[in-house]
Figure 1 (cartoon, helix red, strand yellow):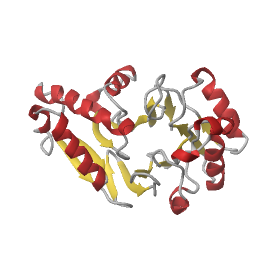
Figure 2 (cartoon, helix red, strand yellow):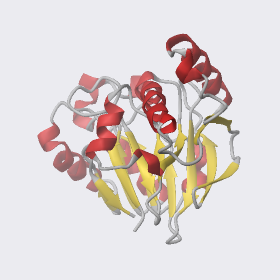
Figure 3 (spheres, rainbow, N blue to C red):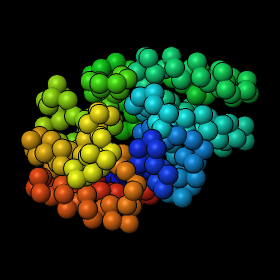
Length: 268
């Protein structure tokens, strides 16, 4: 069965959960990693999720914020060990929009020694993608989507799973109406939910271009999606977050709601 392996569920400043990133696992056990978190802990999360790094040949980076890209530098350091020991077949492919590729490349050559940077364009291949461009990645036809982010440019994607269900990931800003035709009636819709509506005055999600659980649920309802996954959330009450977020979401959305914790697995 296809799965989402949730590596992290938090936003940039969470301390008790890792930054939001996940893998989409296909029927053959290969993984598409979506974002890389904010640091070395990405390697620990992969280990704790029991994901064999040799099964990851594709990474999608959505945007240039630190909590989504810094883990990539550690992935490259980690990958070198497998390359050197002939334990990794093929190349590691990384997909991102043009501005992000320029940023990543610049930082790479500033902070990594040559023994790592020489892997770029050799075993680690950067792929620049355009809005609405489609690529074959694993056994999926991935359609990249500019999410019309209000801050830095950000790309999500849409695809169809082996079971025929549609899967949409739109990064970590509030859904933009320009994408309605791409998302409407999706089977799986991943959307950020910074905090509950009752916490909005304290955490100010709208000022950060984020949503509350209520807002995300209302969006999902208007789009008539079937399954709503809420992520990129606060960690102020992890013990009760799942229960409270689900209760609020169900007031505004009749479909299935999933509020994962780090290392949860969602069967698709």
